[in-house]
Length: 293
Image 1 (tube, one colour):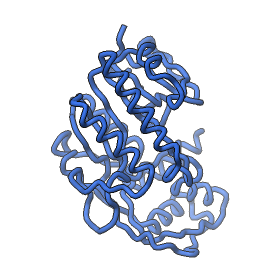
Image 2 (cartoon, rainbow, N blue to C red):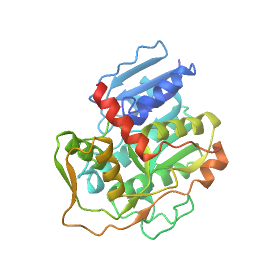
Image 3 (cartoon, rainbow, N blue to C red):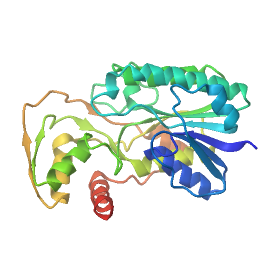
């Protein structure tokens, strides 16, 4: 029997949240996971550990026939993912999977893109109509998949997330590394104090994407708050939320002073206004979850 959804990365930060939301609505959801275990026990869900990069896509779509394909996994290892050759491998694997999915009767594609697909720089909000001129292998490969899907004349939804953060982040990511330093009462050496970024909490990413999926939205949408915060502001908020343990020292500053933030106009016209989790609340939530784990 065909499922309603197949999630590639059903145990990932976004995929796992979408899985729960879809199951709560009574949908049948299959999943592909990688090294992590699936903790969901639900009659409407089955998943298997498979490496999409070296598994025949025909095997995947035959094993998990579905109406909608959700692609939530990609290489995201800090310090590596921006220019890793694995980006092109992910792009090729997804394009092959999309073609097999379409040939097997699949009807809708949902992809998780990135603001890295845009030309970054300047001081204006990035809209869905902004120039797509990525400078990284990561952004180029994401954009390659987006354009590939768009030319297939399939029903597709592609979201470009801005600077996503949450409790599952790698320790090397900016906010996680701040909190880890302060937890150990250490000084954090900040190298980009003035660069401003649009930080969006993982819970907001999954909730907004879920609303777009449920509405049947089509095309490209940004997922960002529309507001940017400087690196120094984030460090100060994290320091305060950590009980002022440790400290922040600007060391060997680098000039990344871009102001990267999303235009939310198209998104809000589609699903209405969004009550975004502000950065202070989001950081406090991460600390609370880590203390409970």
